[in-house]
Image (cartoon, rainbow, N blue to C red; front, side, top):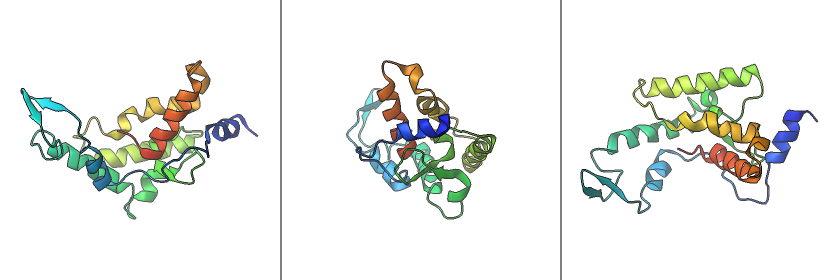
Length: 161
């Protein structure tokens, strides 16, 4: 096995439940209705998904998640996961192992940027570059290597924001 294949095998954790696909837009919106406490201008926000300050960026982000499932865009922006779950993820959430992977990542990010007309500077992919290091360089995170692997799997499988 190559070093890359060794690392990918090491990231697999079949005993853990995992998502085989990222959430869609509706699931993303619903995930925000979890009782979190949000305050703006001294007022508690009852439903962040409906508040005028947050509603539109949440809906735009939901469109990004929907693009991961849309037959017209899915193949352009997703790749199989390397976590062993048999699922797929946004390309930028999987550690690249080749120049082709890097180009696919660039294209996937570009697609999301075009979808938002560049107005979402903090779309879900903005932390993916860091999260990818959790899978590529797990030994760097010693003695918390297992935690790094867990976060890499979870962020990749769910396309966490």
